Length: 260
Image (cartoon, rainbow, N blue to C red; front, side, top):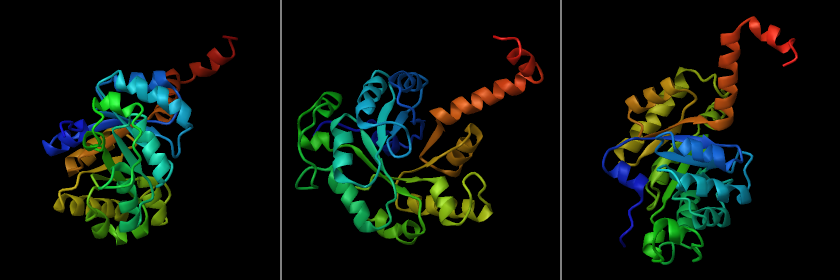
């Protein structure tokens, strides 16, 4: 084995990673994101508007930059995980992991026998990783999401599963699990987030979280999170339009009535 996953190396050497989130099926947007000095760009197949076909072009676009390509798969399904990895993703984020067995299933889909059950067919991955050796090809990040009450109850067992490379907190679903609306979480939610982070740190497992704003991302990094997602493309576009509208103020209505 000669290949070393760049994201795993960042964590091993104590660096933090900052990434972007792609929900729109655009290879150009993915490439632009990757050229903004982000450490990774994650293609969201779960809640984004991206299908398997459009994700290939996006992976190619990210690979043209220095960003690490990740994919959040739709569900904890081995075929979906294997397809994303064969397409050249260097890691998968797997949603709704609730038990140790869920975590084991995700890990098995990322590793070849005898370590797992991944089928051999690295159509694009062999060129991205630069090897046809299964031991190199399976050096991908298996990142499991912690976002439900059951996953919190089983957190120690999930973290103990060999091959779980990192955890990722989904704030919206975790908030819903506490009967709190996304974006309107209370202090007990943030206390729970800190508890999850500290338990991961005690086990030396990298942990990341989705952040709505840059100041929130900075706070998470200062707390000790290993990686943070800075934005999603659709949300960022909406925010930018609103910011410019606020700058225009009352002149917005004048412009709209001018016919241009």
